[in-house]
Length: 449
Image (tube, rainbow, N blue to C red; front, side, top):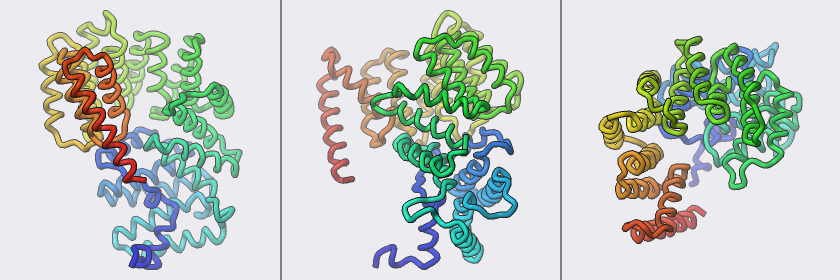
């Protein structure tokens, strides 16, 4: 008997629902904590059209983390927010189908079958009143929420996200926020493609920005694209910074991207000043401290000059990173690596950097996080400890972890470049390693197909 044949009618109904429990969202525990923190850093603004979606996703993540009471609370808040945003006179509409599906699944997992059945009945009632447009299509609201949700996770689903947004927009072209998110998704999908951003993306962003003038995140990325084309953006960036400072604190405000615009295209000093001003105005907002710490990291590691190496800059960077690590206790691995690298660039800080790395190397990490750590440690060994042999060994360690990621590709690329020079005594070993890795990847691909 197959798994499908052994299912009860209720279980079959649950499997057929469109909700987070059926969207194949498989995240490691460390990743769940990271996304929980990211969602908490989005402001709870009642005017935010995505607020119901945010609460839905938070409910799912808290369930996966075993925090069932929080999950119940977030799903309840999601239903309220979805109705408020839609200004619905009653608790019904296709925008609630995902939420009701989530609640049906949650109560099923909690062994509360009567409550689960009640939500399944609510879904049935909505389906009778608001049937799908066709057998092949979902409701626009479901496409939009599914797109928004999947956009948060993996790069390999970016094209699917764009398609879902386009389907939703075709059905409801008046939803400006969907169009803005579609443009952002399109921008991200092209950014990580082999061909890069196409020439029309700037025009796409410009149109979306004009349709959604309050979306500062879009405005920042429009400036970013102008700067890449060599246009002067200094005045517009300063004007945008003033707007960002006046708005509620949120990871949706575009402040992180704006700091990078200042750092790369205007002035490192102005970027630091802007970061400090945001922290000064909102001293209790952890997200702004995270952005400020990131800005100092960029300054010290990627945009080094005489100012970035002075004691006061380094001390401030170290202080901020330590505070951010304490504010994000379950998702601070990247910040710990950043802090180690800042120590490595500071005067007499190599011993502290090495100790931090050794502590991290000895910790219990999931494969993806360990791969990232190996890649960073390999670079640290090469550039700060001048240990090319150790660096090569850790790039190999990163590359052989069967996890497709930027860090794996980066380590493989570094090894390939070293092998091409034929100047290192390990070149033969590197070539053999890369050949074995390619052969292993090809075998795995055949098995998966």
